[in-house]
Amino acid sequence: MSTVAVLGGGIGGLGAAYYLSKCPQVTKVIVLESSGRFGGWLWSTRRPDGAVFEHGPRGIRPAGAVGRNTLNMVEDLGLADEILPVTYSHVASKNRYLYVNKQLHRMPSGLGGVVRTVPPFTRPLLLNIAMEILKKRGKEEDESIHSFVSRRLGQELADIAIDSLCRGVFAGDCRMLSVRSCFPILFNSEQSKGSIVLGMLLGSGGGPVVPPGRLAQRSAKESWAQWSLIRGVQSLPEALTEFLQQSGRVQLHRDEAVTKIRPSGSGWTIHLEDGVLTADHIISALPAKALSLALPSSCQPIIEQLQDISTVTVAVVNLEYQGSILPVTVRILQRG
Ligand SMILES: Cc1cc2nc3c(=O)[nH]c(=O)nc-3n(C[C@H](O)[C@H](O)[C@H](O)COP(=O)(O)OP(=O)(O)OC[C@H]3O[C@@H](n4cnc5c(N)ncnc54)[C@H](O)[C@@H]3O)c2cc1C
Image (cartoon, rainbow, N blue to C red):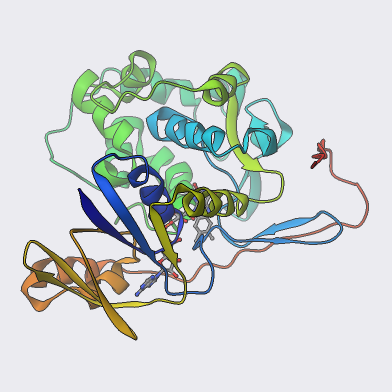
């Protein structure tokens, strides 16, 4: 029986606390969040006219074991009725643009998009896909996403599509990011099936098996590309916080910054700005720099690695148009 301290109350910390609260070996979970609200980057501004502005994430992918697991949790939290799915056939999925060589280009989509040459690409993507199956398996333990995609699918795809994708998803440079960490499915597909395409078709294997609940089954049946929540993604940390408060085993602390963590006996001492507490185990869901500052000097190699992770500034622009001028359908949620 043990006490677990979860450092950081973003979605990572709240998610960890959710699973710990269901674990019979854990008697107490303590979540420590430095700011005045839980959710971290999941932060939505809701306006009285119904408009929702997302400060951070706005679309969550349902695919794979992680996607299914998240949907299972969303269903368990009672948020199934608030889901706002975006299917692959939706206008928002089909109309994605890239600004290349001073021109906007619509990204190829559907079968027609891969069999024809669609600018800014100089040949049909189907050729890259077909040749990928014949490429030899890489021997590196890890490599950059750019090098991996150039090797398997061609440099043009890496330079144009993957570069932009990585800037959008990770705010990072695909020449610096690890394929193994960022796209384990692609990496594992090459390792197990010798090809990304075959891995996608046959399954790359090896990952955790997550049986889909009703919501995850619906997402597969309706071909969701992404989903959000009608009152914004912030509804997820709000529902999690409510669930954890009611569980009886979780203590949630806001405005409690972790300053130091130190090993003590068989557990840990956690120093806060105005106090100290102890736990048998710690799960850190802190940003890399915050964790590096809290670790003892005996963890120097990890501290250096954490401090090597650079960050950049990202700006999010939300636009609201007067009147209903966009070709999208809106579902209004009736709340009882
Ligand atoms: C602009 C933007 C758009 C994004 N869009 C998407 C998207 O559309 N889809 C998607 O899937 N992902 C998206 N992401 C990524 C996603 O938001 C993050 O991966 C996720 O929110 C990270 O959650 P986290 O809990 O790990 O970290 P965080 O959300 O950063 O949470 C860390 C928490 O730790 C707290 N903390 C910091 N220091 C301390 C301390 N010393 N003591 C205690 N607490 C501390 C912070 O206050 C914070 O609450 C986006 C990210 C950004 C920035």
